Amino acid sequence: MSPLLEVQNLETRFFTPDGIVCAVNNISYVVNSGETVGIVGESGSGKSISVLSILRLIPSPPGKITGGKVLFEGKNILTLSSENLRKIRGNKISIIFQDPMTSLNPVLRIEKQITESIQLHLGLNKNESKLRAIELLKKVGIPDAEGRIKNYPYQFSGGMRQRVMIAMGLACHPKLLIADEPTTALDVTVQAQVVELVKQLKKELEMAVIWITHDLALLAGLADRILVLYAGQIVEQASINQLYKNPRHPYTIGLLESLPRLTGKIPEKLPAIEGVPPDLTHYPKGCPFAPRCRFAVEHCFQEDPPLEMIENGHEVACWVKPEV
Image 1 (tube, helix red, strand yellow):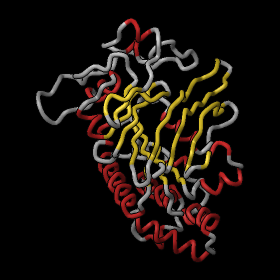
Image 2: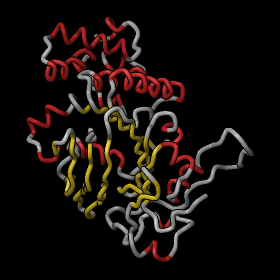
Image 3: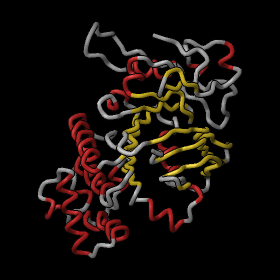
Image 4: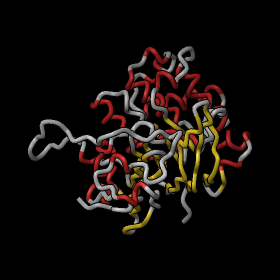
């Protein structure tokens, strides 16, 4: 069975006055139907840019997709006409953005914002699309959906606005839902509710999910497989069990070590990864993580390692591949 989404050697660049920013560098992965793939990494690692590139939402100028293919159901999205691309965006592939307050139009009622894509893609009339929107609000747990559909975004709390965004994303029964750090601005309790909601809806609608986050702990109970991004490239790719039990890239090891533990002796302070990410306008010759890596050897500074299979379903881009 062919994958739902196949990203092949994707490259995205930003042409700025300060130089060319190598934002996404030759990344490849697949997403199968019904699967949840987590993409994790620090701020600036290329997580959001990589998925915005999938839907050709990169601002141009200065951004440009300079290489690769994005195959969705066998069709290359990067070569589709604008008209054919619009048939996929918001319909077969939907996205939940990071900040619902800036993603929702503040001067339009919630009803208008949800029904717009329903009328466009499903061909329902005004009354039918309104009933569909109310049904969606109920599905995502918003009380008094019939009354609240007339509200403006400012009349909702942060958690409720995020639920509205999820309802908009699910409006046309997408085959793939992209969630771009949808819980970042929420408190821990509401975050857990949103995660459980997406898991439940994914099961009901049998859709695939790409979940972007900087929080490895959040993905533990959510994802089937995880991609670890650093400096715009995949440094480790593994199933959830493989990654947590046997991380083999020093960056992944550092991320896991920095998580607070509920068992054992409580340290005075959490371990941190020393240093800062590289300047992507001057991409390093060797491994981009080498200057921050405690396992680095001389060869790490000379050549960027390829992504290699170390066991079935587990790939690592590292010359050392330490075991801890």
